[in-house]
Image 1 (cartoon, rainbow, N blue to C red):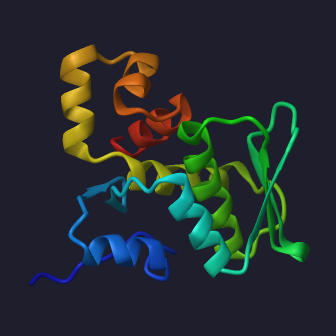
Image 2 (image 1 turned 30 degrees about the horizontal axis):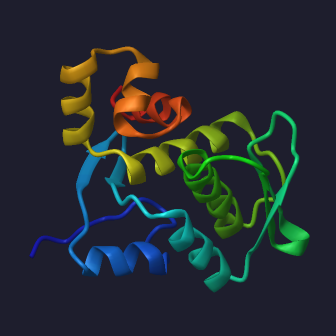
Image 3 (image 1 turned 30 degrees about the vertical axis):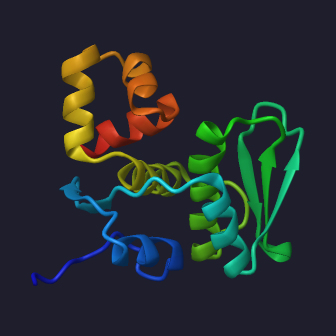
Length: 160
């Protein structure tokens, strides 16, 4: 078997490791990132947070989808979000937890985390198929791929 390099931070993820061992994996390399597309249900991402000792709370956050508070190891998610929005948002915030970040980080850090999440949720094959079906419009691709627009935009950044 060939050696595989994973995107930074995901080697430690029990959720990803379990899914990879179960054979649910797709890998691509884009923009210097190795992309593992694994679509976990919200319950699995919540369980991963719990295993990492991260508490998840749902609150009315206004325009923010989520944030991580390092001193209390708590992710705050906007109350009322659908699973389609909550899963990638929680994945993003858990990457902040893994890194030890507190609060919003610089644009390059946020962009890199968005790209990591996008590569976990979209494979090159899925993206190609979706673009053939609906064209290059970000909104249409997001609907076809069942992810938020920001995930499609971040994935596109890895193609450059």
